[in-house]
Length: 77
Image 1 (cartoon, one colour):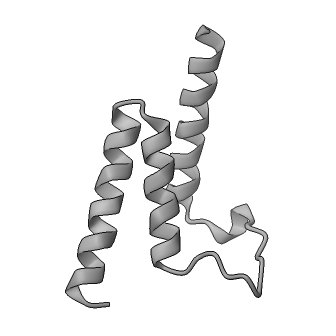
Image 2: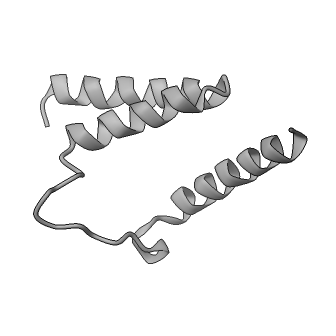
């Protein structure tokens, strides 16, 4: 990838992180959506079912942390 693409990816990851830190899940989700679109993750011709086996351990741990945070917020309401 070129520098411009790297900058976009880095900026979107930063926005995602800030969104999570500030509790703004809509912003975090939109940043991930834009990142996925930027890297052509969504392909009309093929739909891949994601499996935990496809993820790295650190990705699974991060997602588990996000799930725990969301559940904790929902139980407080």
